[in-house]
Image 1 (cartoon, rainbow over the protein chains, first blue to last red):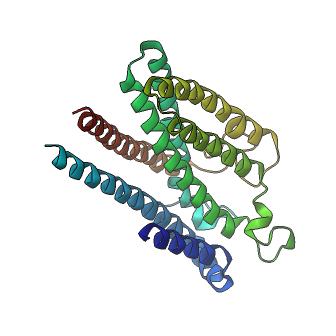
Image 2: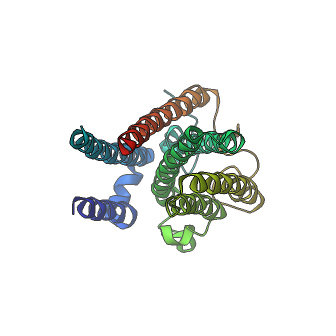
Length: 69
Length: 207
């Protein structure tokens, strides 16, 4: 469920960034520096989401270990 | 920090530290992955197989991030609303470099699919190690050779992408190389977390 929400949210952002024209003018202002911001945010979100997934797996593993002992 | 001024990309030249280092990190992680695959085939030690797998996965993560960031960068630099031939992202997505990178990533996705579809541990390790070597060999034509032969909007057709003195200068190199090292170390750290987790999982499984 949460995965689906995150995924649709991401797709929404992609859509917005890629095709919204008003946004595009904004992104091209100030020597296109906001493109760098968008790229940074993408990498940050990507790595954080990946680490959250890793954390979930680890939590699951911890629970399994507790049952076994 | 001052940067060289280039016509189309302007200030977004700073994306070099992020977008390009993502790909560099991916290449380094895939190289380590294939080295571990060969090590596994030589020694039959499953530890190397585990390492090889985790390096490939994190390499894919960085590759996907490199692709996403490239997508954003391209849609505000190559895509030009005043030019109907390249008005939208869809019209520039045919670029040979993009397709080559997509093929390389898909080959590595197939590596994961192949790997996780085999139940037997030794068989899985052996087949996926061999496939890993093929996947790495495919990186050469798809992201290093063909994009250099064909015309492309992407810089680097006439030499090495990102290392060309026409694109960047010494000031940028001073940030760029440490950035590559830093991102790679981040990748290695995530790999080490995953490897330790896998070891723990196996320990609990056999108990």
